[in-house]
Image 1 (cartoon, rainbow, N blue to C red):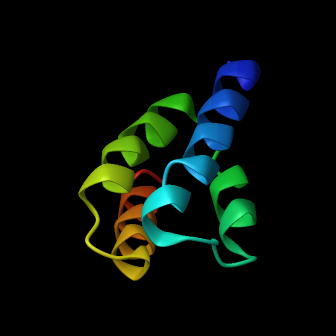
Image 2 (image 1 turned 90 degrees about the vertical axis):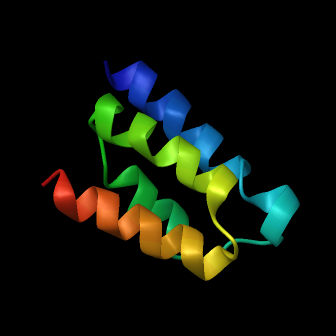
Length: 68
């Protein structure tokens, strides 16, 4: 599971970049703090549906908080 979570984390760090540009410096650490693959998979759609980088961050935090 660890390898799967790391792969999803890497994808989540790359998916928003084409749409929103550089990510805030603290975002990768927030993403890597989640180690559950199911939580991380739940974040993937937010990278596509978010209207802004802040929207992506808000959606990410909401999902991560819900799954704690």
